[in-house]
Image (cartoon, rainbow, N blue to C red; front, side, top):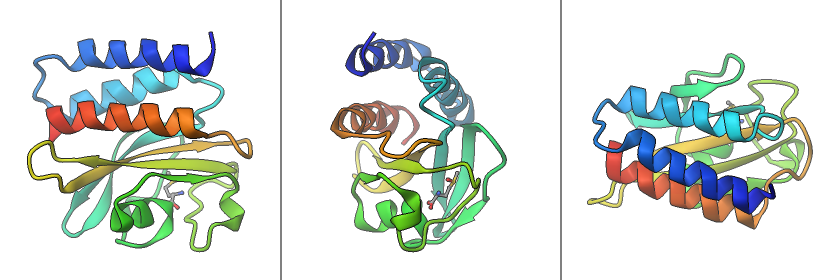
Length: 155
Ligand code: SME
């Protein structure tokens, strides 16, 4: 299966997983697990940081221990939040201010999640890979769709 087909499966799975669910932690935990199951090699760390107390706080994830707090504008996650845009980082060592939670991380994608009604950023999807150049436009577009589905459910 190519990447686009895997994302099609993943999106259908996520839609049915979260249908009618209101438990935010449970929804995000299951979505992180589904993403890791579909991309076990590509996604070394996959999870969520959520806006709370004017910072990003660690949410449900799959992968190794990660930092708990990220300030607005800090690292890839804090920058994606501040600029309100998807960031694809082909080589984290070349990203000024990258926060290295694991020395194994080599490339990364971060996608903001918006509240369905207010449009405000309520968190981000953060995915790290142990290879350089893992993420491209296909990942960006599909993860933005997943972020939209989540914004409607957990926003
Ligand atoms: N690398 C991220 C920090 C979070 S960890 O990768 C899980 C960043 O620079 O925002």
